[in-house]
Image (cartoon, rainbow, N blue to C red; front, side):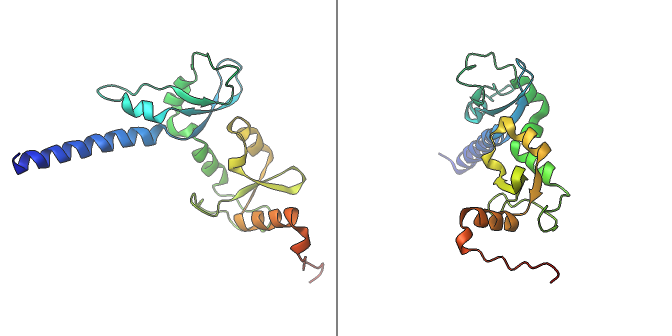
Length: 179
């Protein structure tokens, strides 16, 4: 095989891989949508692999791989996919979280939350009874309601709060009034 044909084949394959990969990337992740049947929030995930595999020459074919209303409603017509198409990345849990934390300060220490480090020290939520929880522990269908009632808490304060709750025997409270 002549060298220019080989180079062309490699470039073509790389282009196809990038195209498939970008489609997969676009449709991966947990989302929060409004279920068309009951008009309540539902947590869904699009089958991103199927979307990427069906993108050739047309818009990708979308189908759900998960839904918080399954298995009871597993036979639904998946009409919610129109919301996924229309809202795009706005219904991704990751983007909802990033938007919610934007310009917020920690409810415990007052420091700005800042940009979220998705690979490490992520902020948490301060919910009822001053309990802090990591946002990824909240089911997607409960996320919007939880965010409406919660306060932001930075990673350091969340870690300290968690330590006090889980291991009070190793914590010394050095906070004194008037100091």
